[in-house]
Image 1 (cartoon, one colour):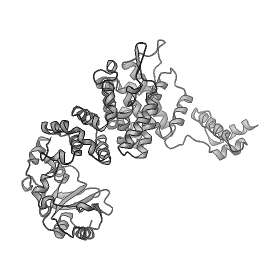
Image 2 (tube, rainbow, N blue to C red; image 1 turned 30 degrees about the vertical axis):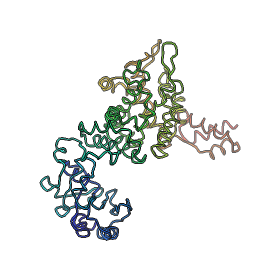
Image 3 (cartoon, rainbow, N blue to C red; image 1 turned 90 degrees about the vertical axis):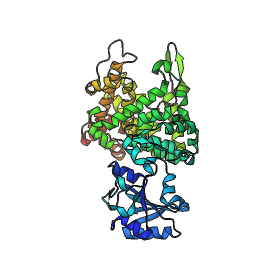
Image 4 (cartoon, helix red, strand yellow; image 1 turned 135 degrees about the vertical axis):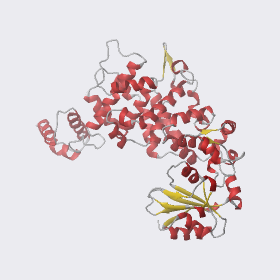
Length: 495
C-alpha cells in the first residue's frame, strides 16, 4: 500500500473516524484485518472513494450503493480491506448510537492515527483510551469482557444482532449481560426476518471457534437456536430415558463439544493427527455435520422390546440436513459433505462391532466413501467419544490409539467406556490406514482403466471396473505391490 490509510481518509474526506471492530480489537491487541471509517456525508462520496483508492493503490467497489458504502481492497493484501460509510445522522455521536454493542460503538479520530498495511492485516498506532469517543461506556464493558446493547432499539433495528452477540461471545470470550439475554429471549422469533445469508455467515464464524458447543447451548437457553433451526425442536424430548434431560439435543451438543476438542487437539487426539489436520475439511462443515447428524432421530424413534431404536435415521437425516442447509444458504460443497457423512455416520460403528476388521472391509469403506472418508472419520470420533465423560476420555486417549482389542465372547456392552474404547480404536485404525495407504493422494491405485483393458484383453464395459476393483483390493491387501505385479496378475488371468 502506497500511503497511510488513516491519513489518506483525512486528506480525501476531511474529519473522519475509525469505528466498528477495529478500535475494539486494537485495544484487545487482536489482529485487525478491516478498517471501517465513518466519513462526513457528501454528494460525491463515490468519486472520493475512487480518489482514495488511487491514492492507496487499491481496488474499490460499492458494498451498498444505496447507502453509499464502499469497500477498498488493497492489491495483494490477502483479505485486508477498508470500508467507507457516511456518518449516520450527519455526525459521529448519532452514528455511534445506531450501532449494535457498546464495545463496537467507540470511535478513534482518524487524524490522531497512523496506519500501515502489514500483509493480511493493518498495524495502527494512536488508538488510546483517553482519545476515544465513547458515549456508551464501551471501554468499561471491554475491560469487564461484557456484551451490552448500545441502545434500547438495537435488536428491533436489526434482529441479526441477537445472533451476532453469541458470535462475539464465541470469538472474544465475552459474556452477554442480563438485559441483552432478556431482550434476546423476548424477541427471538424476530430472527426469522434476518437474511439467510447473514445467519449462515454468523453460524460459520461461531463454528470456526473452539467454543461452538457452549455457544449453541447458550443460544438454546436464550430461546434463539430453535428459532433458527426449528428442525431440532423434536430432539429436546426425544430419548430422554437414554440421554437424560434434553434428550437427543443434549447428545447433539455433546458431539459438537467433542468436535470442538478434536479440531483443537488433532495433533494429540488421534493417530496421525498432524497430517490429518493439514488435509481436513473446514470446521464449519464438520460442526454442521455434528449438529445435524441425528436430526431425524425423533422422526425415526421406535421402541422394540425394551430398547428405543432409530431405524433409518441416518438416511432420512441426510435429506433433512440438506434442506436445512439449503435454506441457510450453505455452499453446495458443504451440503454434499454433511449429507454424505450424515447418511453414513453409523458405518464406522458397524465395522467396530466385528471382532476382526478385515483389509477387505476397510478397502470397501474407503472406496465407497471416497472424498468423504476423512470427514466421516472425524465425525465418528466426535460421535462415539461423546458417550463418555470428558475426564474419562482424556484418560483413555492413549489406549484409543492401540489396535482394536478382541471382542469378548459375550460381545460388547451396550454402553460405557469399554464400548467407546473399542469404537475409537477402530476409528484410529482407519485414520492410520488412510495415511499409510495414501488414500487422500490416491496413491493406492496401481493401474488405470485403459491399462486394465489392454492387459486383461477385454473390451470396454462393466468388466473393466470389476477388474480394476479387484486389482485395487489386492494392492490394498498387500498381495500386489507394484504396477508390474498388477499387469502380470491380469495377464495370467487372461490366459
